[in-house]
Image (cartoon, rainbow, N blue to C red; front, side, top):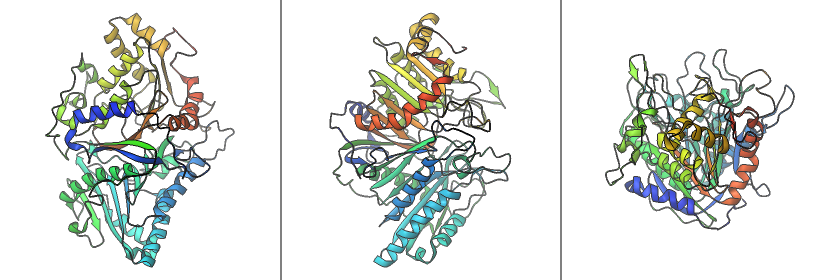
Length: 546
């Protein structure tokens, strides 16, 4: 694999690490960690192939289109797993497989086939080498899901692997830590603690690859979700594994071997014995690596795993009119909460939000967000805050700085309950506007700052306003890139959320240039046609309805 690295210092990682030490010092080495010696896992002769984007059909023409990114992603998953000698960790988020549902709790369809193909090779090698292969699969589910079956998924894998499965020790689990609002939301595959594929891509065939059942809104064949993972090797992979060990330790403590309403975790092992679950695969110090990159691995524990970091003395900076981030209406007898903006203890065990804010705050020239949303889901059953008030305040400060920082935001096309929390792009624009106006003290100054320095658009992937069948474009990436140098990729959304998540922060100009070239710049090339703010084409003009 070809390494990437320019060795020009790490001011962005330094800023993020300072924030993490202030917020969650006691979680260093488990929930977050900075490591050296990493490299981006690119194929020889294809230096940007560490970026795994789906469907990767920018500028498609005609009624038919190919999805080359899907094939590349599936092939990489199979190849990585096939090389496993000791362990394979797979995490996912899924929904109850009710009639008409487009997804399952565990990887399905082509995703499952890619996983099983790799496991079959790795298990065969384990048989020939007289070794045991440990395989863990952890799914985040809603607490009301009584249909989840770790045993069924385990048995399906055993059938697909065949006789070689006798050399595999399985631990398959489903977990939720607080009702419908806190559960595992990570999506990655980690092999031997040294190679990881990680990002926003859900293992859901009917959203990414094939069309789902009628009424399911799973249009993966005709309107696939745009998403992105990265492939990484080195000590940062083991750091991610240590974070998974925290989730597995909680799952083992709370596990039942039978599904029932209200149970926090369900667990299936080779013999359905909880004590056989490997709650720790990555004990011990993180080994050194010989790659050129430093990486910060950072996660979040949501609610229910740990109440706080008892060693932390962090106090969130005060925020003017913090109530702007809470809904001012009632729905079904419950008011949208503002907990993610006000709960100090929550922040100390969910430091990834602070890490992303610190990354953005360090920007001096340019900030790019490619996100499903910046607005939270304020309706039932989540009732989340309307936005991360401190993140929007950082963006407001950058838009009004002297000199200003240019900010670009691309979101999924509005219209809930699809891949958006808002009904119109104006809701996102208004959320930013209210914080900029609060900072400047002037409607006119806020409008001018946004018109001159902001780019805001819903996703397009071609010159067409929709897919050929009229379905809108869906975006699920969780990417933040600053100053064309440092970036975050993971499962943490920029909008308020209370799930368990994880991501990597990498600082390297060459890597950021590749991310821009193959994804972020292509995204803006087409999305800018639908922009409600674009300082390049409409300087000084307010175009969004506020």
